[in-house]
Length: 253
Image 1: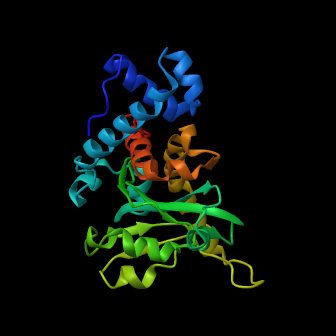
Image 2: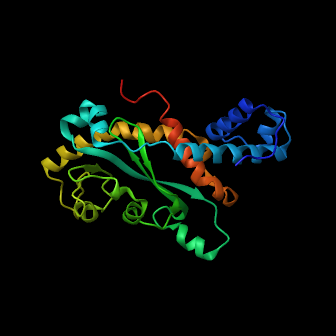
């Protein structure tokens, strides 16, 4: 949706948006740096982030089984060759919403703070291939996985890798998909040697996925506590940051 005409050249408008995403400079700071009025900064950002979101939504980022296999790095191919996607939930702090209902829905007892969260899926070779809608922080990992539509994209025989907090085995089994998660201790019992070995194998491949998450979190606009006035652009901003990392140099040479 086109915004009002700006005196700033188009290429500089785009650069302003990239600077804000990466460095989270304030609007007053940006208005001085780009020699535009303070009132111009917000419309420029909103126009561009909505345009980027619209364009990125048109890109077919989900990969076929054949494509995943072709791009699969040796570390996955050796131990977890059926992996189609590695999933993780990422949370962001938000300031306290004015609505009591929204306060309750976004409250995370684990973080002791109001949060929002989204599910991200990363292919074994390091590209983000799935991004869910942003939901309020009280939603469980199981619920956000079910609501996201991810299950409808997986094929029988695929496997999904996740952190040990994802209790989604039952819903994956129902569609013929296997879940690989690190084993976890039960009570005070020591982990068995085979469990320790499995944990090390999963950690060895997931370190590359963690590098991808690090790239996403380098966009400082997603750090700190997100203001309620930014909620309307949060989905677009998260998708924009995630997708921009897919244009960076590959994680695997």
